[in-house]
Length: 491
Image 1 (tube, one colour):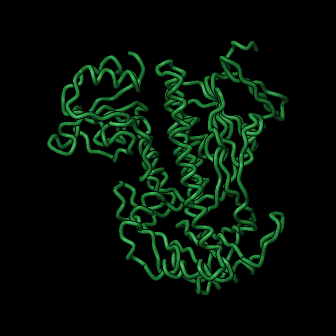
Image 2 (cartoon, rainbow, N blue to C red; image 1 turned 90 degrees about the horizontal axis):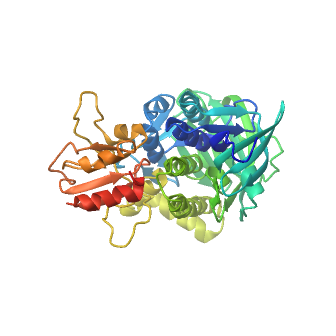
Image 3 (cartoon, helix red, strand yellow; image 1 turned 180 degrees about the vertical axis):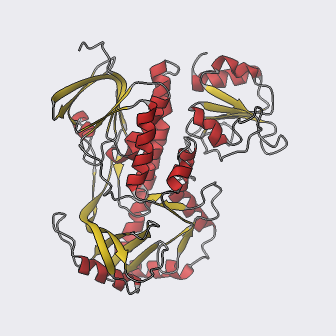
């Protein structure tokens, strides 16, 4: 293979949720995509179990949300400390809840889409080499049949905390372990257990209990006095005792199908981009399981990056567009580390001031008002906005809700998320926008369902990831043409 012979437009390393959503987006856009996965076989024994509102919105924009929701249990609130609950029912979203479902279900839905769209998924392929130059990236992988060599225009490392891509690039991953000896188990409980999501903290440690909706529960426990190495097995009787102590409930396991012990690091790569190679998901950032944010942040990384890679491969956008992946997603990753870190330190703390704060939060219950609302938006992911230029319209960079659209043809999209399923940007305007015809391969045009609503005088350009690229009240044709050229490239 010569250095000018490309076997793929993009090679994605890692077939977890982050890599699979990215691969599906790229393949659906018509790019040649190869996915290298070290695991030779699929596994349904995974740690993550919560899918938040913003992630469900992104899945809805790909026609996948309803299928995934059918596999799990929507939970409209999360109990945190004592009587304190994070209420998600009031979120301004079509999905005002967290979906409790095993990560294997999320992976299955994303994998089926990626493969159906044409992604080449290669299991049992362990990355051993990576080299890039001015025109592309060369990767080598060890397989049961010998070494494979791949040549692509771009590569993405979505291969987890122990990322081979990150190591081969030499990108530092500074941080520290924040939790050791965390116990995991999937169990059935005796009797007729309460199937609400529970997080409890006590002097002995803390525990989470999450129902999958099919009789099985995911248990996560941390025993302050039982700090064993990851290699030590979980003694189910000890986990039962911890649950009883911190929840105050008489819980016993009727059946256990899986246990594991792990430690949790808090780390973030300084750079998510190195030339033609990008890092996403746990390869770029990792943190404690508090808040269930890892899987969700990774999927949201992928949604931000995928359309930019499509634009770069197609030659629609300048290289600077790829740089916005760093400027937009790195601050989000940093915020997630801080919020999950604050939660776990609050749960861990045994000194009097920390215990007093925990008690005060529990006693506050539903009286935190705007602070609780802000927390719900951050945990759910819908509260994040991307940087906008000074003087830009207030909507610029913000997540756009699932707006109702006027249906101009039978069977046409009636919601923004349906319009986004074409994998293109969406231009929303009450006015005639024939100027966008020159970009018809990159943008869908639509009108708001209510012509007298909040957008009556505003033209809004929504990026494929559901954030506002540009907005303007009563723009001239020249201003609209300039915005389309900036975000979608020259026609």
